[in-house]
Length: 238
Image (tube, rainbow, N blue to C red):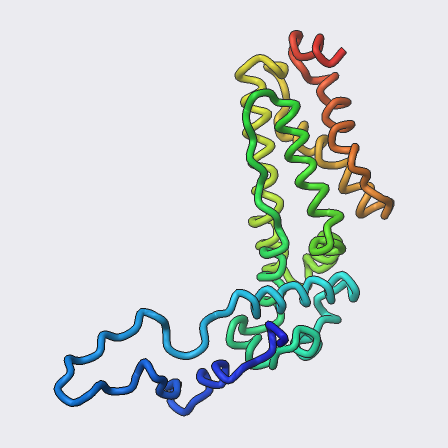
């Protein structure tokens, strides 16, 4: 059975007056019985995670194939996700809202950082960034968002809030901790260093359209730290 195909429960949301059909749970008990305690389960169709995941995955795939929000259509998403258009519109009011939800869903969580040393934490952050750039769900997403910034400013605002700023803040915290512990130079320009660390992967992916090798995060961190490390970490880097 297709996990995302509309089912009979979906039609419950479309009953006149918005009332779902009675079920066995709603049936009255024998005469004289105490009133039935209402079930905690919501009436009608639940917001199925399986259905939503299929819709969002399909949206991301089509964005990667078509390269723009303008080329995307709700009809195409519905057809390829195996749902009706009404199923999509019940969750998202328009195409831009759907794309924003897909962008948010594509972002992997910030990795756990052990805080033992700046180098390892920076490598983990850049590895997570690389995974989003080259992963199946994130492929083509960054380029699409950047090209749509003027046509769809709300899309870019949400991408900046959910993706860019979260990553920037995580890196900012690590760099400031490194300054506090003496691992990094006290006069380090944190905002500039954060951009220097992230730029090589973005340039390879978006400007040169070349592969982003798995070893690049480590190479970038080690190269940058040789210039900004305090005296003790610099000796460790050799």
